[in-house]
Image (tube, rainbow, N blue to C red):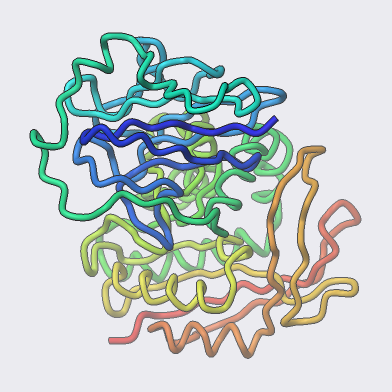
Length: 361
């Protein structure tokens, strides 16, 4: 049965948005790295909330919005199940948006479901109370949304079954130690951990290496795992392609396996963004896959099942010389590269590379 999200905007328009099984993100941030449904309502955060398929139903996840998300007058803290007909308010009752999930087969012709909502919706002010400078629009389900939703689904299993093993590998620890030694020469400052996942690297780099780490990940579920495992750490929901960090705000960054699902043009934009936020002379540690069985450099493997869950993750294998050229064009001089084969039978059978670059002066 098809599902739509019916959103009433402040000017009274009702937008009927098909909700794919992969989910839907709502916010003010435009594509290509923004929300699937993009609104200009100033009470809604740039990435406000997300709908996820959860079993036979749906889960509504607040993405750390400034003004909150309510379901049936209850504030959502983290995530909450939603059913067809539940009243969803984004950005507060006075100036926010009101929405409902609707199963299409249950609708008689020409029925306006939002017209039948509670008085909570009828009391909302209209467009005359707000400044709206562009038309609200709906964008196609994009690659970033697929990656985000996939990691939301596997976050708990990733944290419990995989993250700890990553830090038991001596060569990875050696590269993190090298990065720590180099950035300390620049003085005190923050090192970004982009694509930080459940915070395992941030915790290690803080506790064992003495670094000040700020973790960023597009998956709110991963960030929730990170905050649970490392409550004293600093973690944010955010895209490495558009970081809320000032120019030169970091002395370095860690991107261990963070660009695996980014195509070449996306990697180019990410390197440029990392070069923007890293101080000249700062450092970037980048980990990626080079090749695997039947996966030569330059090929792509589409991961559809992970931890027994359905995911949608293109995984890119990058030749060492191509990765070095990409980093150089993005603003980093490659200083060293460590290439290794799998250390044991339980590891993914892929050749890995850890490339250390220094931000061009």
